[in-house]
Image (cartoon, rainbow, N blue to C red):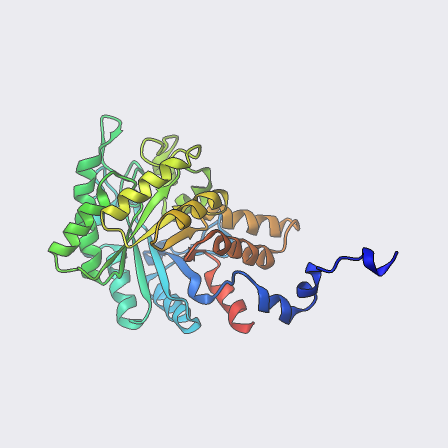
Length: 331
């Protein structure tokens, strides 16, 4: 074969060495991209979560220690989720409005010990309702406006405890605008809102519901009357546009990997930070596949997180944040 038959352009040249691949990488994953979700529980309920290997429910002191470690690694923020004791659950989720509930006590303790880390708090009633739904249940229907009124009170209580970012995950219509007004009227104009703007009624949430104790309460019921249909793509633009118009500072797409097309759409359509949530089922699949010898966990985790960045995510919720941060630090 003569030299004229060889290509002048050889894309493999820039792939040949580690330094060259780094030099021309189009997207990079950094510690600043990571948000670490933590499950907090009363001390008696702490311990491993069977469906989420290497993830534990933490006592408040353990959550403080975890936040301190995260901050030392440079992780910008943590997200707190409560495992509420069954005795504190009710049909109306009133414990979510209690200034002394598990989340509020956790926020105060972490802020006192690690003031430099951001704290994100979920706003929804499902950790506190005896039926496991995100809102008030009336005659078998989740009622929107009555639920929003309670979510506003929940958001203010969390802001008073020291929460930096309020994250409504309930998918009620109009809740972002109502929460924004409630926060402003209570003097919390600087508290941000991260809206779970496109949260799909996904089958990937199972381990999370185990972790917070809502799975058994929900039973065979589902959340399809308010969470988005996985079949819908264009509808996500309407959801995100509405939440931005109502005052959302950032928007969330959830789940993550099965919805990379939605992340890309929102990144190209709107000029606000678009976050992704690598949900419990995604994490658990990689862990269980690794245990079965089918995958190697950390290379797959890093690849999946880089895929979120490539799709346009500004930051990513991942249960592997701490271990990933250690890898990135050492690199």
